[in-house]
Length: 218
Image 1 (cartoon, one colour):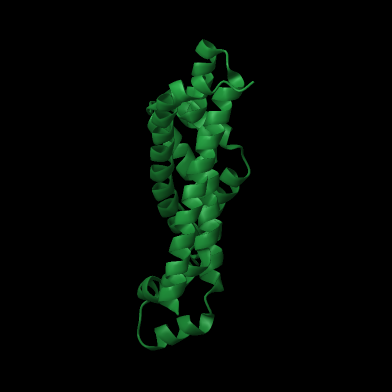
Image 2 (cartoon, rainbow, N blue to C red; image 1 turned 90 degrees about the horizontal axis):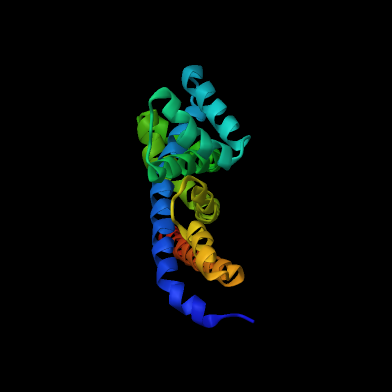
């Protein structure tokens, strides 16, 4: 039978873990968007010195497990004198991982903008950089918000993997409290509910953003 007293008693500990999960998610999201934008622009570049490294990065990250990437950064980097804290190791791994997926999403959004608009802006004397910033990216943004939002929801759930490098977010909070309560079902259930609340809140915020973008376009 479900022990509600245990859930209520340990709920504050889970809130602390949820806050750390949210912090990791937001910082990783911002870095992942920046990395994804840079990678997408490099892939679309005609300069192979930019294009091929970006293509290799996207291919490598999308072809390997996030957990392995996390272990390489946290356990492997110190071998070369680069020792990051568990927090920044987790953030870097998540940002690089979601950045590769964001790159493909952003690239697709840019390519979806009609080429005629690009040609028209260039005929008005705009540089390629100015055309990208004022014409292409604003239109691409309306296209890519839904898939980027989906990437963010996946990112929130993927933060559970940082528990493997001692970050006490929701998953590790549940694992630690199981040792003292002997209530695995209740602990994991509470963690799952908080993950669901975080992802649902993120989805609602992104839908509101999508609606506002649609209204402004109309």
